[in-house]
Image (tube, rainbow, N blue to C red; front, top):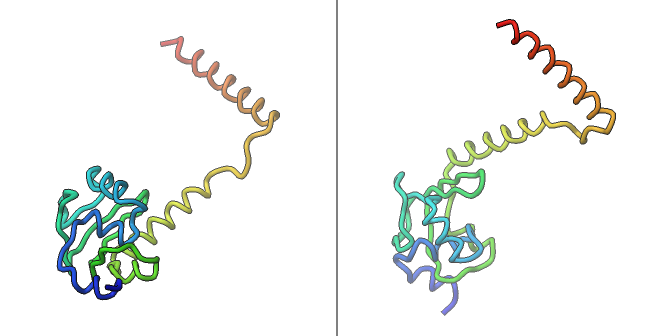
Length: 144
């Protein structure tokens, strides 16, 4: 039996196995930990590892900074390549725009970082600045 016919034969399967087959997680044990950690939701509620998934269900999966809302299009007992895994689900348009927005916000936040570490001279100036300002604040506070 090939992968296509086994995909059509399955009516429902465990969510941890589907997440593994759809390549959201590298192993089933990592998928299980993510589910138990509350990173996978169905209808806004946390799911258990033994939850049976069917075609048409909408899942919310959190991986790192990204949160994806996907609709299950097919089930597969076997883990195929990435092109086959992408056929198992479809990400909602709202989820795609939300992820792109948050990604751009993270990139903008990183622009505020300096390009390099301070040199020894820069650190001396920073320490001198902090020392001068801490003394002026401490002398102002003594009058109260």
